[in-house]
Length: 226
Image (cartoon, rainbow, N blue to C red; front, side, top):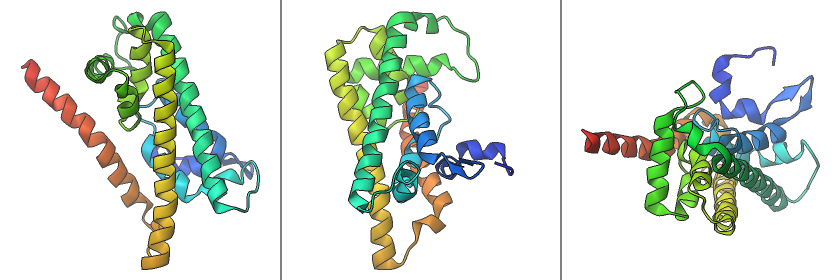
């Protein structure tokens, strides 16, 4: 914390290794970020996907913030489950906000925390894919922030929303965390490639993979409007 730099806010390792006076708080920060992406509508700058992938690599370190589990598989399952639950809760808050005051957002002026164009794009995305949009949006930055809000605005059936909410949250967390954990082990054991030494490349690659589809959709939308 003594060497804080604003660039740390987009660095997943900053959150994973976060500590205060030697007390490791990484697991709590990771869970809060997952919740905040949809619960506090701050997903457009938080490192969601790359954070989970790296959390898989550092799963033992994170879980040991709260308890010690010797079994490696149990560590990964517990971390994935906690992340999924944080995501579910965040989506529930987003849905509630959308159902109560969502239409207010369409008249809200743009700010650092809010861009109306993202809400409009998310609404179009939701109308095209329906309930499946909740699943697709989990893997797309920005969309996963506004998808539950839009679901609340259009009064999506609560049971249907919760089904897709739970399903998408578990698919998202288990896929990325397990991928990070076991890909790290596989490459290290078979090719002596330590992914911990290539964190910047991993982050850039994951950001590109998740952000490019969003940029592509935005560019197509702007072209059709011209």
